[in-house]
Image (tube, rainbow over all chains, first blue to last red; front, side, top):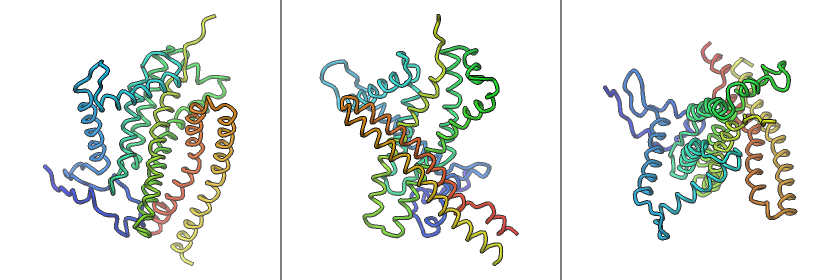
Length: 243
Length: 89
């Protein structure tokens, strides 16, 4: 039973209190079911997923191997080829096992970050729950790929290298390197959103545009870095050289 | 001075100091990294695309320390637990 639907909160302009206080997207309830609620973060994530799915469906409808390609196919092929090369160079493995994770993370974060150019679209990546969920995916992907590629023994031997005394340090670094990924994305996006909203409260005309343009650049770089670091961490355990 | 004034003043002061010192080290480090990358690009223009992508990753990782300072400053300003405790008292 839906108790309350309030879609006006989705696009509401930043008021003075909201600009002075920190906006918490997880607290803004769109659909209230009583026991649980759908907040802006989840709703905007759904929008982004729907957009990516729609674009992928539209562009893969008429795939051809001929010389005359549609515009959609050209753009998507360029992106996929670029990511494929980057993945292979970074991971050092020639098969495409990291490609799915890399493309998924990159596309989701990129579309989330680029959609900030729509005024008052609240990017899901500016919420700590989204970025930590993405980091959790990487946290689970690291042992998966390590065990799959190198086996269980080399994966656990990584923790007692170079000496077994460093075991707690290695465990900490394993956890915090992934935590830092989530915090980095969150901090970058939050600072961009906060800068834009604070500037638009003081100088509403041209000045926020410059920060938003800079935010597009940082957003795309952050998406690239998140995908790249995910591959670097996942491919850190390699198969041992046979003598 | 009651506890409100002390907590508020120390929070704002601490946030400003945190941002100032935190961004200083990160800015110096990023400048050094970018300078080294530019030098490498000038010496080997063929490798500039690889150097550039590596430089961006390095810059983003260096920027992380400044972002942690920013997060701490935001926490001190907007989500200060001691302020909430003083309000609840």
